[in-house]
Image (cartoon, rainbow, N blue to C red; front, side, top):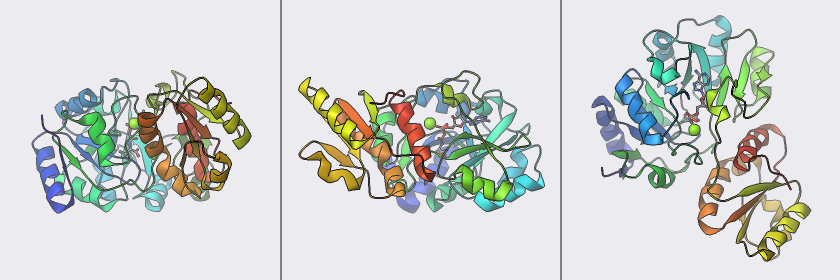
Length: 329
Ligand code: TXA
Ligand code: MG
C-alpha cells in the first residue's frame, strides 16, 4: 500500500472519505500524531491494533470534535465531571468515564471505562467532524517506539501500512495527553501530561497521581509496557558534571555519544555533540521526542540531562525515565 502525506483542506477531505470507507488514517494533534479509525466499527479498530503491532489489552482513546459528542459514549456524566470537561476540553487531556454500550469492547480492551479526548488543534477537530464518527486513536508510532510529533516520524513507522498521513506540522505540546480517571470519588492521574496535577486540583479540589511504573495492575494498561524508547541505549544524567563524565567514559569506549541538554548548558559541552532541547520547559517538552527519534539515527548512546520536577518537566521526565529504563548516572 502506498502511504500518502498530504496537508490542507484536501487532506482533511481525503482523510474523512477514507474513515467513512473503513480505513485508518494518521492525523496531527497538539500532543502527538494519532492513528485513527471509526471508534464504533470493531473491524476498523482491529486494523489500528494490527498497524501498530499493539497488544490487544491496551485500550484506545476515543477522539471527538465537540463536547456534546461525549454523551452517547458514556453511561454517566456528573456535575463535577462537567466542570472538568468545560475547563480543559479542548486540550491535551484524556478523561475516563464509564462507557456506554455503543463503544466496542475492542476499543476499551474489555474495560468498563472509555478514554475521551477532544484535541485543541483545529485540523484534528475538522478531520474528526468531517469523518462524522468518533475516532479511536493511539499515538501513530509502531508499538514500543517513541511517539511521533511530525508527519515524517509517522511515515518512518507506518510507511506501507496506512493509506494517508495528514500533515499538520510539528506537534506543539510534544508529549501525549494527561490521562485522568474521573470514575472514582477522587480524580486520578494515570499518565502525567501538559495538564498538570496542580492545574487539575484548582478545579476539582484534590487529585491523586498514580505512583508506580511498570506494574501489571497499573490501571492504565499501557503503563506496564516498555514505551517511548529510542533504538539505542539512553541514560539520564543527574547534573551536567555527571553528564560530561559519562559522555567522556562512553566516548573513550568508542561509542558515538549524543547529549540532550537545556539551552543554558550549551557552553559546558565544549565541542562534544549535543541537541539543545530549548531554553524553557515548553520548548523542552516540544522537542524531547524529536531529539530521541533524530538522535538514535546519528549516535549509539544518548545521555539526557535530568530536567527536574517542576510542572511540565515532571511529565517530560516520566517519559525520559521510561525511555532510559530508569538508568541514572
Ligand atoms: O495525546 C494523546 O493522548 C495521543 C493523541 C493521539 O491523542 N494518544 C495517545 O494514545 O497517546 P496511546 O494509545 O498511545 O496512549 C493511551 C494511553 C495508554 O496508556 C492506555 O492504556 C491508556 O491511555 N488508556 C486508554 N483508555 C483507557 C481506559 N479506558 N482505562 C485506562 N487507561 C486507558
Ligand atoms: Mg502511545
